[in-house]
Image 1 (tube, rainbow, N blue to C red):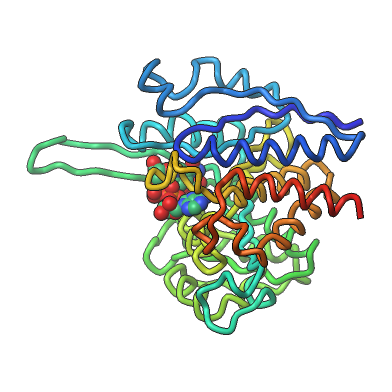
Image 2 (tube, rainbow, N blue to C red; image 1 turned 60 degrees about the vertical axis):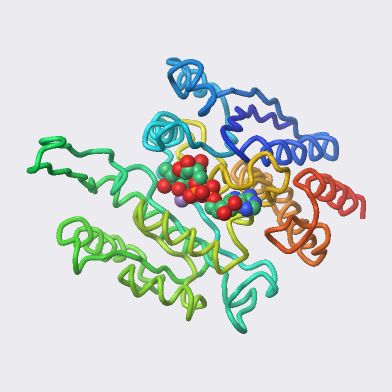
Length: 358
Ligand code: NAD
Ligand code: IPM
Ligand code: MN
């Protein structure tokens, strides 16, 4: 019997709406498979909590989360609390505290009807973006000098350590080798004359251990163009924290939008819990209306199941997502449907259950 202890952080805006549906999927799997069980412990942390208590999470929050196998998070950030406070005190704090240095973000087209790109099919858009998730442009290092004075200067420093750069690049080479795919590095050594020159050098050095892996290296500006014009060039992609953030929203754009984009924040050594979440944020423009697409959050459940060695269920969840895409009427408005968040969730559970019985 496998037991997985999950900490839930539904967070802000549409976060709680979509997490509820992901939890229902896990509960359904528990019903269908007597060898798996989950416990859920919910934490009320987020912007409302901040407005009441003056912090985004309890002081001992990180210690309490340490006890769990996984964290399942909705979204963080909402008008009323400055984003740099809410995100640094909760989401980014967890990623760093638990050294979740690998961010796995599939950019994978589930159905040709979902892409705005002409004549691209599932075969043309099927990549795994591996984003560095612990340092780089998100080191949080900087200074604000002469605030409010004419000579005001603001510094934001990227930090690219040998250890941090090597481990993410090595992880990506391993993944490319394991899955027999090409590996593309996205960087910007022509302008970022320290950090990205170093990145490119490490990419080459580590590559010596993987002569069997075919590699490409693109500048991030050109890569943005090719994501749109030639997405088939990319299979496994490795890139820095900020570039990975931006490229995966672009990736969402070519595969059906943020309602379908997932990301796993992984601590590969399993020293600490890993965290599973949709790529999207709290979507204040649609929050509270019951129309948020829960599929990205459900896809995160698939990534969670894969991570815990339950690939059979991970695949069943992904296959069920694919089978839903054809039923436009049963989808949320972002995908042209009329269904509510919970209707999509319920239909999903129904289909997963049917599938399991066949
Ligand atoms: P967003 O991802 O919340 O929304 C961007 C657009 O996508 C909006 O039009 C929104 O309606 C749409 N969208 C997003 N998720 C959707 C879904 N599941 N179904 C249907 N439509 C969806 O980005 P934003 O508006 O730039 O940011 C809002 C807040 O969320 C900010 O505070 C931001 O800092 C935060 N944020 C948090 C995370 C996170 O917690 N991981 C990620 C991104 C942004
Ligand atoms: C994401 C988000 C976060 C990031 C923000 C909210 C700090 O955009 O998970 O993609 O930049 O990593
Ligand atoms: Mn983002």
